[in-house]
Image 1 (cartoon, rainbow, N blue to C red):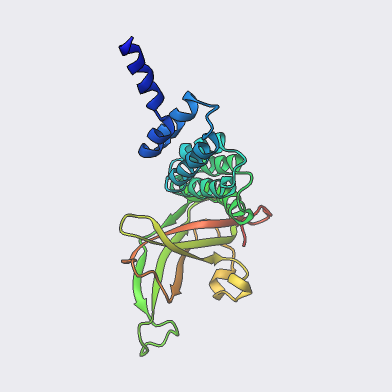
Image 2 (image 1 turned 180 degrees about the vertical axis):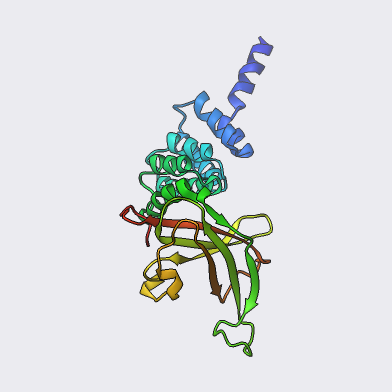
Length: 255
């Protein structure tokens, strides 16, 4: 009799919510809600679970972390932010892989992504289909005078790379992007400028040689310079084509 009373006393003293609150992990709150879905603290438990899953997703590079949140909380106050985070993470994955299939998958899985991001991805599908026909040499990085004054101070950075069209298509527009990378290889900043086209960013004029069609077997030198750069940048760069349009082709690509 005394044993039964003791067991009942222990059961009465148990507080699953307090236990979950003490551990405060996704697994703990998930277990609490699964064990007692009608608990009076259900709303508070779900809210804390939502916060933790949102934090995990937004700090992650794995799409499954974003998808786990969106499946569990499809209409929460954090849903929009998590969808945006997922699109950014997926864009970075597609950029690293840089194949037509990777960019197409991004477009299919992120219909609500920012319009500018989707436009870039659509352009990159076509670029990736031709990228093996664009041969890039080694990128030269040096400090330069932005006013091109040989006696002036070195107040900027210049980037130079040779590009050869080894394919069989004439290119009317080719936009190149220089990416400033961290020591670990992540992108700190990026700027783009055409190697072929009728005008530069904001309608600015291009060097005359850039305004001519980029024909098969042609070789050009892409030159770009910028002033301010991230403090943590240590001259590690990557140059990639990000927009393309072929002669007689009105497909999206020019910005």
